[in-house]
Length: 433
Image: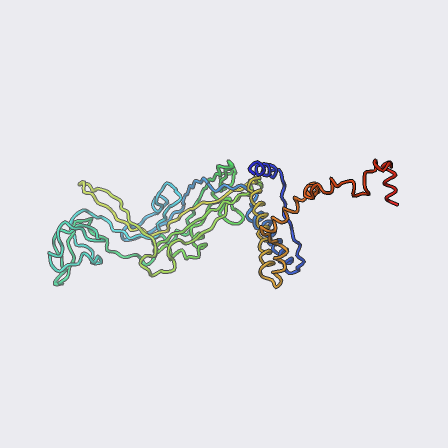
């Protein structure tokens, strides 16, 4: 039994098995199957290959470098700073030209601060006091400007005062101006130079026109006709986000500049062009919110003739620009092409499976089609068919026994043909007569 089983297994390894198909003459299921095939084929050709370019190998590991420069000057005349000309070194922070930079548009200036004792600002809740015990010495004022000295300072006969502190005095007390200090900054220009490289395909490009004309960048401005002139007017960038420059210049804000590179390297390199988009990133919808706008403080230090250190404190409001670059490149490759075609073929099989479910379970005559598609085989039936196949002619002759093969010759007329004296042929012919 073991040898027979091994022999059958070895012979079955060379067998080829194919499916048996049942053709169902059902127009509704047939129409459903064709619709599924057309839908899957349309999805594969239009969406996968034409829209998503599934025949390409892609590279999303974009390597990018950003260089920014702001240009423009303006003149102001204030009581704190007097007459002053503002150039790029005064209103751009940081000056290196990184992908994130800040342009000052409004200021609160507190000049001539010196480290000494003075009264804390009344706008600080933690600094209010009624007696000296409310100002424990050595403890800093929460959200304040200095460290308490232990004294409660009052103005006139008022019962409530503020704690005395050791800090840069006088402390900042002025409120934000009603008009932006650098309101004319909307005519400033921003130069954004972007280098990109896709390492998988060793492809590099820049967003600046490759020309030897030195006057090109001094005279051009970004627009539909000049996509390779990355010179942007500050007021135009703000307006493209749907905001008003004077409003955002008053309290500050954050602007996002997105550069998108979507390159089809099966085409010429000139077809790989940058696409720009501009958006307001801070919360522009709640203008009266305490969290709206953008500002920070910095100081400029100096010493007088006696060597005493002073500083000018500036609370700067302005526009922060975040330049963000992303993209991808694609090029034909046989491997993703084969994978996507195989996925489409698999979807075709899924369509046939769905139609089978409809045919044998959901329609009215499903039991009829189910009986035609599936054949039930029991163990007894298998044994019966196997026994019939084993009854060969040789086996039936052996099962009949020796009766027919060894019958006595007396049954044919009392002796053999030889004993009757007749040749074998004559005897036979006589009996036929």
